[in-house]
Amino acid sequence: MLLLLPLLIIYLYGPRADRAEEITRPGRGWRSSLSPAHALRADAAWLLLAPAGLAAYMAYLGLAYDDPLAFSSAQGFWTREFAGPLGGAWEGLVAAWAGARQLLSGSRDVVFFQAAGGDPFRVAAHNLLLFGFLAFGLTAAVGVLRRLPFAYGAYVVTALMLPLSYPSGPQPLMSLPRFLVVLFPVFMWLALVCEERRITGAVAAGSAIVLGLFVTQFAGWYWVA
Image (cartoon, rainbow, N blue to C red; front, top):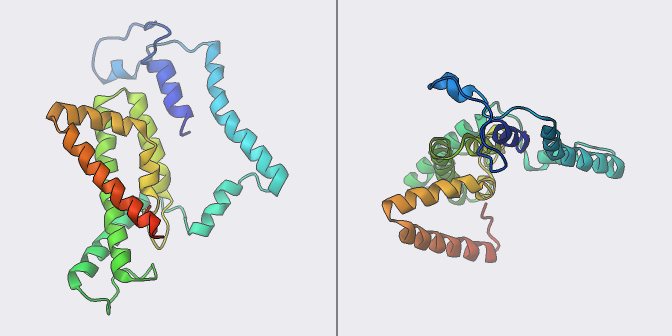
């Protein structure tokens, strides 16, 4: 779904460099936007290469480990469970709220988020940081849907549905930065916004500083994402 859906949208609606629009759309409005610009042809079968790669990998897992869904069942080691569509976003908000209360209390005696072990201040900081990435990701998803071709937005939304529907108990938004960093339409949208507001240099400098902080933490054996 992650690859097939946006590929199918590009095939039917564009933008495409290999051919001009073949179907005249009726008028304007939402009905026109739902009408495909390109006809479905036999060459659409090439799109099946995307799920074929997954099928080949599942076949390998079945032969090597007797579990074609090992990539899914292994998520249990990270305590990931299905929490409903976007259920992880709500759990991330709850964890961030508990984290804010923990830091504002200034005390480690009362633990506000008990699903995770370790230093409650560090847990609180992690959950707040991850919620910041969530806020950025959701804002960017809306921006991509508004400014870029719809297929790009579909790719971002579909990709975010996975981590936001399968949260980890001790850290609901665990690994969200890594899920975000590969979503290239997000950075296309960010570049548009930065250029329009003439803040590209400031954002690049801020990103470099944050990168340096994360590298320092990683080098010190701290969990970053």
